[in-house]
Image 1 (cartoon, rainbow, N blue to C red):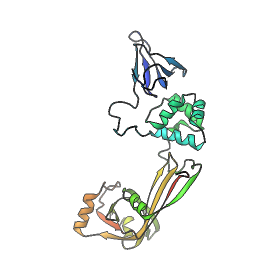
Image 2 (tube, one colour; image 1 turned 120 degrees about the vertical axis):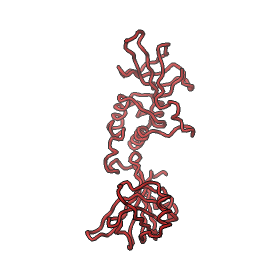
Image 3 (cartoon, rainbow, N blue to C red; image 1 turned 180 degrees about the horizontal axis):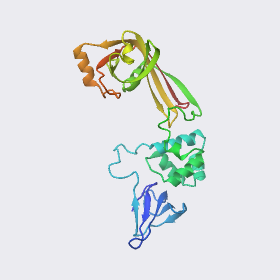
Image 4 (spheres, rainbow, N blue to C red; image 1 turned 90 degrees about the vertical axis):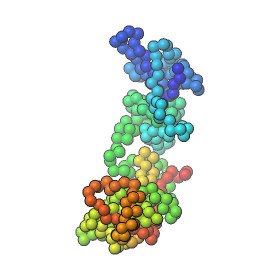
Length: 287
């Protein structure tokens, strides 16, 4: 029998229909994952040292076949990243956080460094130790506008060079077009591509994005990492023109990574030739 931190240990009842007991493995005593284990029982929340018998088996949570990416240690899950960020933001060591949450420091390290699905009781204790909520650790605010989390303790704002701006733009996805309409300024999101240095998006004639044609406009793309309170933005300014040459329209359509999310008939391609590229990035001061 071998286990990982965070796995579930289940002890079946001795007879059919008899109750079973289960708990979370929060401590290992051997590097190869063999018994004994420190187990936090789900019914009492007590931690005991256990030498499993023949009626016990391990449920390898987060370690099932096929979950290994083949790239060594898998990246941390969202819960682990949020726990680590909150801990660092409050200036707490793993040892102090583990003490407050009544768990083994090794188990906390595992949660922060690997994908995992900690029990509700574990999340409740972690949330209390970090002065936050279970909902926040689970990402319950993902439907809220980004940027409502706490700022980093020591943020650093960096200006990005043109090459890095081009590299970030080239990831394609969703950007925002700022245009002037008869009703006034407007900013609308569009799915976009970058082809031969030009920013291209599809829209419909007469739509707000179509008002970009024939004028100098601004196009912005950004990324916000809510869990880590960091992000970047890139602003491109330049003239926008309708793409009318059939071969060029066909080439753009064939190279498009996705159809416009808004749906409908959006076959008008607009291309922006950036004359100015600027960008900024927020990171921890030590990076």
